[in-house]
Image 1 (tube, helix red, strand yellow):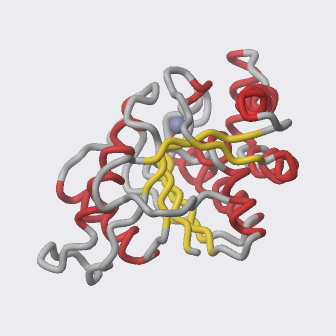
Image 2 (cartoon, rainbow, N blue to C red):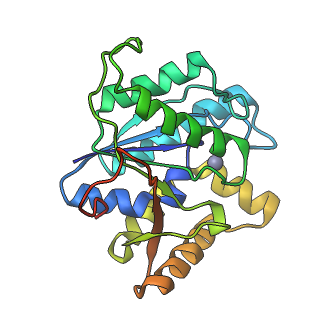
Image 3 (tube, helix red, strand yellow):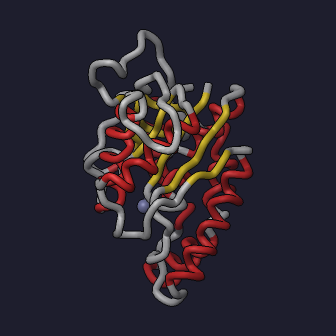
Amino acid sequence: MRILAVGAHPDDLEILCAGTLAKFKKDGAKIFMAHLCNGNKGHFEIPAVPLARMRDKEARNSARILEAECLGPVAADLELYRNKPTMDKVIDIVRKTKPDLIITHSPDDYMCDHTVTSQLVVDASFMASLPNYKTKRSNYVSVTPLYFMDTVNGINFQPTEYVDITEFMEIKERMLLCHISQAKWLKEHDHLDYVELMRKVASFRGLQCGVEFAEGFRLHYVSGRIKPARLLP
Ligand SMILES: [Zn+2]
């Protein structure tokens, strides 16, 4: 299996689906981790340009843990729009990675980079299959099944499928801790413990499905995306 996970910012995938990606990896899948925004506004003190560089490095360090290929970014934070140049870049991420399954944000997550990422990925993964839609890469024949991952803190998201990630919590935590700039920033300025938050949500989703830790997903339930078997690990 080839799995393409697309988050808005460096660190979203770690918070919302890294346990599942680790489980896919253990089953022999090839993992691609993309972030569409460069993370350049996620700090009060570090200026945008060095911050974007730092966050890119943190994302690559995290992806390395899963031997995943890290892709993106295509825009600065809060400057991600559903326009043709951006769409073409996202289509080319799909065409390059040729996924059997895509994971991305829920369309009603908490802020615009997340909601626009969701729209871009849903539309790009359809458009990527059309030979007459020209980009730098040739078309990928499949319209890929797509799952929405949990929203931040699970708000207004009812999973329809769960993945038991108990065995993979250590890896998920290690990947999240690669995002040093964010962990430090959230602790100092919002008094939030990044890892503790992630563990609470995973524990709550675990409670719902009878395991210690889980991640929740919802299938993008539309014609052409439905398969007669469970695709999540
Ligand atoms: Zn984010």
